[in-house]
Amino acid sequence: MSPEEILAELRDVHLPPAPEGAAVSAGFAWWPPVAFALLALLTVAVRVWRRGAWRRSARARLASVEGDPDRLRRLAAMTRLFADMARIGHAGRAPDCVHRPPERIGPAEEARLRAHLGAAVRRRHAP
Image 1 (cartoon, rainbow, N blue to C red):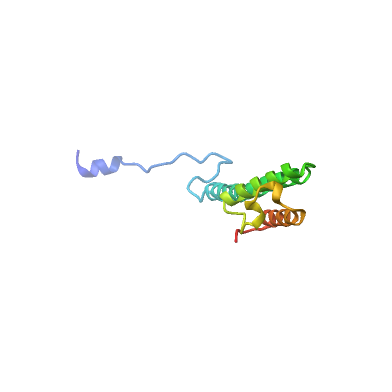
Image 2: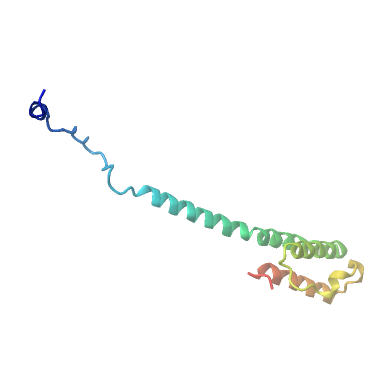
């Protein structure tokens, strides 16, 4: 076979027609950036929610402690709450009454401790 005969037998390449209603596969795919953006938004939302979890827990503990009628048990629970908040770095400077036994804490110092804990729970950033 000569090269002219081989070239004469060549034909044009015909592609099958595209199915009707199908999206263009060679075009820009919009769903990967949208999925990535949603995943990033979900990650940020979960981090923000988890970052405030200690505050929600401390508020609930403080509310339950303040409702306790037994003064000594209430003071012991408030000092434990203060110690837990100090352990994670959100308690601030300790009032002097925290270092004494609950029996030696007066009503004015109890009010200062309660106010300090309430302010630490409401504070957005640790001092």
